[in-house]
Length: 257
Image 1 (cartoon, rainbow, N blue to C red):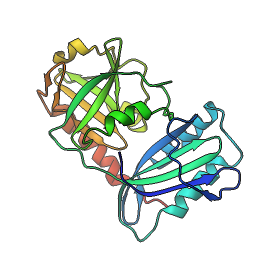
Image 2 (cartoon, rainbow, N blue to C red):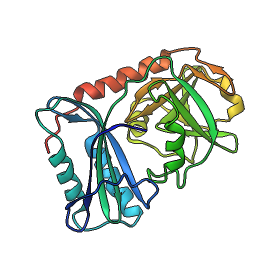
Image 3 (cartoon, rainbow, N blue to C red):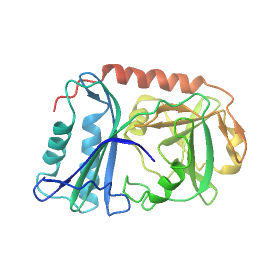
């Protein structure tokens, strides 16, 4: 499990600090943002907050001043004199706002994946029903490995990220049953076209590259899949997407709480 460097919980009714709860398994939503640099920057910050508030409303756990209070909690806990390379997680249920920071692990080029047969509850949303996935992730080194969630022999998403598949320089993603993260939406606007297609486990060898994209990992090229056995054939699209992503990182504005 992740080693949390800072963890705090606040009661929604009065914003008083309470005993920390990570909220996993409860009825609620969360977002994870990359905080980096000194002074701090938060990549795609406004989009993360906007999406989190939208999810809060959909899950019917909205309350007056929720966005204002979330921003206040972030401001309280991020320090101007600290150098960051961390993942900031904000989780919300009907009673609590949970804040945590953990060190961001740099993904390795030799990155492997294993497939598991599991579909998240309401996978189109970043909800807190993640206990089963966390059980799998706790058993691996997430700097060099991940899990792919599969259902009906279709690959949907990883335990931490969205997935892109590349064949003859064309980029594909699953059609449904996955959460479109902020990084995924960023690339949807930046690349010419991401083709929606069912990605079946028995067709993996048709693809030259498999790429993970997300707030935690950034852009990662998968080197191998264990079963069914698959090996990376190219790094071309990975390098292309990495260049676009790194430009966004460079242009990211300072965070001013």
